[in-house]
Image (cartoon, rainbow, N blue to C red; front, side, top):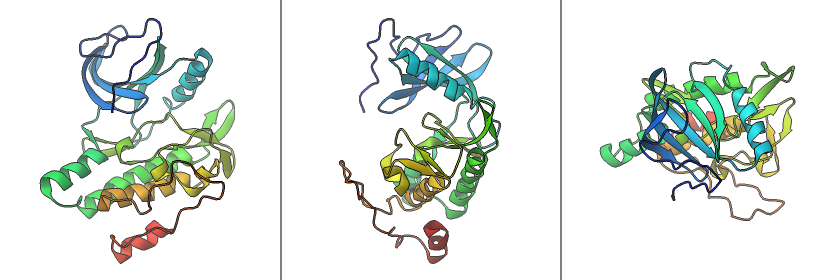
Length: 259
């Protein structure tokens, strides 16, 4: 994946030793996607943190995104990654988060590549239960937003958005989180399509969209494969996935995954 570059006037070059904000010094790159990088960094008043840099170019969009992400700072749950602060600098939105050791994707690769086996099912089930607890908390319409009680659909549940902090699995990356007021909510942006629920392709979230993505996440971590063929690059209006192929998991696992 190429480096995230930003040509906005005054945008900082993300590299070890850079100081993107007062008191923060970048140590090393920890992860990279198409529109963001995550760096380990020294912080002004405590232990090292993770700084996520999201590309930003439009001032009004940036302000809206910062407000949305700041709404997560008040949420306190043992299986949601703690957000310490959100702010903007030229060219980027910066999110200060607790630092993790690895992602569940990293753990799966260690098991597959170094140990030649799948993740131990009891351990995987423990981590999935912890993420499910975070999703139940997030999805419930109990959060205050603009004087209303809303839930949030995370919108991008997948193995590399689950971090390991000590012996705890914690859900992260709330950039696509969408407030929900009812059972169907328009979703302005899709997350990772291989993990997306069927209704997302039709342009909306349901109350169980994140749960669908969690089931796909379990299958990927358990088997190293997706239960569906990849969706085509261009989707037709009547696109529908085939039924999930769960032949690689045991019979007791199939019932909850199908549900």
